[in-house]
Length: 282
Length: 281
Image (spheres, rainbow over the protein chains, first blue to last red):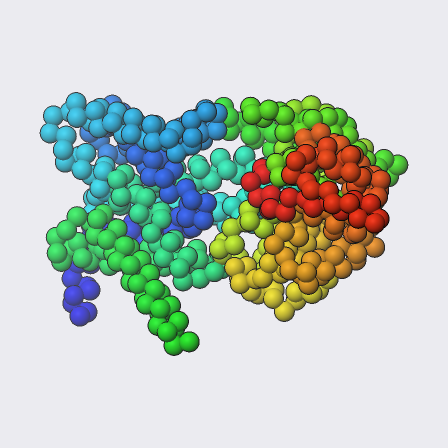
């Protein structure tokens, strides 16, 4: 058993991958708590897809170099979150329709740009589904710094985010800067997505934002506990997922996401059965 | 660019955070309030004044603009024309106004306890980057005491009865140290006992100098329990003491065909539309 756990750790890339998966899990879960409570899953999914053209441009400009991609993705994510925010506010089109249009359009643009490079499929797959085992030490620092900023900001604005999520009208009568806080939260989601990009990729991102937080939501009715529990579930899924990926040779991003999903399924199933039986007992 | 604008607005907002109360001005003065939606006028030229310690019931049919009026007074919605003055100032500079939402508009599965929700009332006073101190928790517990919910402080909000939900929001308003309390249909869906409990808490608030503005669709409760009533159907049809306002002409003007007037020995008995006004925004 000990060998089973230690064997992958002799590889530096596995250790780096595990560290990345745990950090990303924590950041995604904390931000994801608000994504779940405010019903922003579709926004998160769209935002993750909308940064693909940014990555693509960085990829083309840098001639395939990986280092600058983080910054390109960061700029794209922040611009997209502001763009989606502005468009969904100002048009007569419903918000989810507006998001759908931008999301599919930008995603297509990203794929088109990357496809101009010959033999693009491997890199495209990494952007879409993540490449956590390709994480370098420099990437770990970026994840630590930017993920840390996100978590600290959520803690600093804890009570304000709680109020705008629970009761926007109360937030307005308390004269909180509601629009600023809304934008801030969108930007935090954007940064979280960029930080998690290498771990799960664009296409699976929404699962990291939503699934651990939703699992925690089933288990507790206290906001701080929900955040902590979501972080625990997400980082545990990251570790379990990577071991599964190592031993069964399955893609790391999908292994992590599948682990999250299975945990959610178990909790949900157990609660449903428990409720049914306790009702029968009465 | 938009973000920069938000930053500017925020810092501006923080600077003129709390405006002084002019004690010579009425607590609330509404001048010629109108709000135009694409579908038409939601409110049309509403003007009235409230003095400290008064309690006003706004009554009118569904979709008459009652919630809209409350939200404009709270400074949450901007009127198309006209203005609201709180102690002679713009409402956006005040945190002494609370708006208690309709219970149907609240996400009762949100993961917070009763004490958490009451503490939210303190967030305005606390300001950014400051955590609640023990004095804030004292205020929260005192507020819960006033609404007799101390024993429910740690309960998750989905496990409250309708009356308890309403009282929790009153406690939140108390924690906010509100001087003007706006309540949107606070009695809808409550049984008679819970309604009585809400009224007895309102009595205590009035004694403390809190001014209360409530939207209602129960004409009888409005007539019996409030010192001022307003009949609203987009326009303000009448405003004053209940027995001046509730005469057959005014009621027919407000409710039209939806109201049935039944002649009795001491005047006319009015049967209003009793459905719940949850489709208003």
